[in-house]
Length: 199
Image 1 (tube, rainbow, N blue to C red):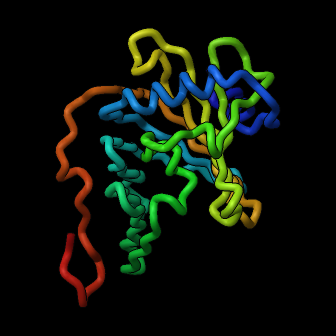
Image 2 (image 1 turned 90 degrees about the vertical axis):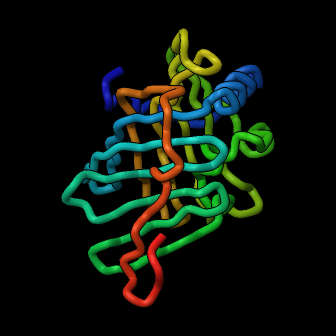
């Protein structure tokens, strides 16, 4: 699917849909052991950054941006850490406070805080998730493509995050690979702060 078509599907208006689609997504997320993919992340101003994402369940994720972007995001299952090597700054927040909790905490029952989106082309599933008790965490809309041989018969195509300030960021994945060996060292990172010991 063309990138713009994926983006359009990811921001489709939510409506009631069959709970069976949520069950399929839940089964897919729980079946994924590892995933690697290329990503293109586009912000509200149309600026796009690229990189690679590596996922290892339970809860580990790494966003490695293109070489000229001094940012790194790593999740260890409990928290997401953003490292900005340009300004030697490290920010950390609980996974549960991030819309990405849908992706990296598949043990949760997603039907409690997500719903399927209607009007999506055949062969696609789009779900929208948010914590109604904490709207400040933002909303995530995730798109999946039916793909034989992928975990649960689905492949994650990408997602759109809308934060509490109305800023929208869309991430489109390509070259997805599942079940590939991923070393735990992938999720270690160098601490740029001079007064602390590196990770």
